Amino acid sequence: MGGVRPMGEERLDPAQIRAARAMLGWSGSQLAKKADISFSTIRRMEISTAKVRNEALTRVRQAFELEGIRFLRDGKGRISVGLGDKSHP
Image 1 (tube, helix red, strand yellow):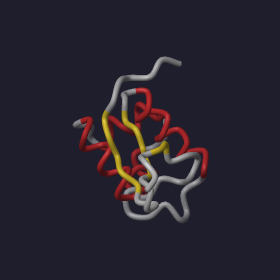
Image 2 (cartoon, helix red, strand yellow):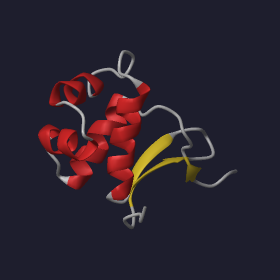
Image 3 (cartoon, helix red, strand yellow):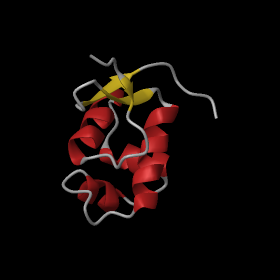
Image 4 (cartoon, rainbow, N blue to C red):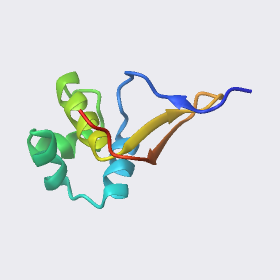
């Protein structure tokens, strides 16, 4: 059985985005500001990421990771969201 490893560069899904935002206690507006994207884009990506540009998802992921959020995949391919140390650019 494999251990937990970083998720890689896969697209975040709506549940992961909502979970990470909740872990940080951020509002949708706060996430939009941190990721430098519109609040309406945050609202759309928390419903479905299918029509959201990769650049917007990358900005959201980077904003989360700078605050210590980690997206991990276990040995069975399941993805979890965790809070670790803040990263340093």
